[in-house]
Length: 312
Image 1 (tube, rainbow, N blue to C red):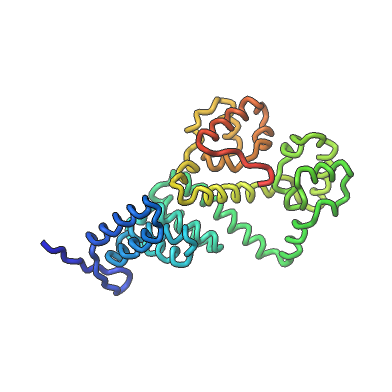
Image 2: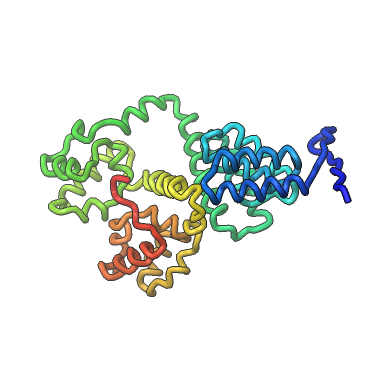
C-alpha cells in the first residue's frame, strides 16, 4: 500500500509534509556513504532526509553534525536549534549547540541548553563540567566589562617577564621553561616551578613577591588553561566517535587509594579533566610520588590520553 505523507506543524503556523519512510531510506544511504568514506554523498543524503521529514530529530542532528565538521558553522547552528525544538530534545544536540553558543560568546544561550540537560539528568558529567566552564567564561566577561581599562590589563598580561626586576637566575629558569610573559607565569603553580632543575625557593619567593605587588598570584590562570586543554581534547576527538572517553569518570581507572585521593583533592571527575592537568600539578599534592604518577600515566595511556604538557 502506498505511504501517505503526514501533515505536521513546526513552529508557529508552519504546516509541512512529513515522509518518515523516505527520510529513513536517506538516513540509511547516508550511513552507508559515511562508512565508505564518501562524506559529500553522505551530506547530500542527509539533506534529502531533512527535506523528506523536517521534524526528524535524527536527520537534523546528523546533518548538523556533518556540517559542523565541514566548517559550515552557521547552518549547523541553525539545524541544531531546529533539532532541539523537537521534544524531547536530544542530549547530544543540546551539548553541541551549547559548545557552538559558547564559541560565539553567547553564554546565556549556552547555559540554557545545559540547564535543559541537567533538569532531566542532574548527574550528567559532561553537562556539569561544561556548565562550570561557561559560567567561568561569563564571569570573566563581566569582570572585563566592569574594568574601564581592559586594554591596560591585557597589556600587563602580555608584558615580558624580562621587564620585571628579577635576578639573573630567576630569568634564566623562566626562559628555559618557555615562560615568556606575565600571563604565562599566572598559568602555572608553585609546584610546577619547583619541579624544574635549578629553580629554588629563593627564586620562587622573588617571583611571588613581584606578583603580590601587582595584586596577582601564581596559578590564578590555571582554570583557563584547564578549560582550554579540555576544549582542545574535544576538538581532537571530534568526529572520531571517541569523544565519550573524555566524559568517563575517573573511577573507571580503578586507581590506588593514594592516586584516587590526589585526583579528588584537585576536584577531578572525568578523564578529560585529568588529562587537562600537568604532572607537576599532581606531584604538588602531598604524599603523591613517582609511583602514583606512573600509575595515572599508564591508566590514561590505556585510553589513548596523556597528562597536559606545561606549555600546552
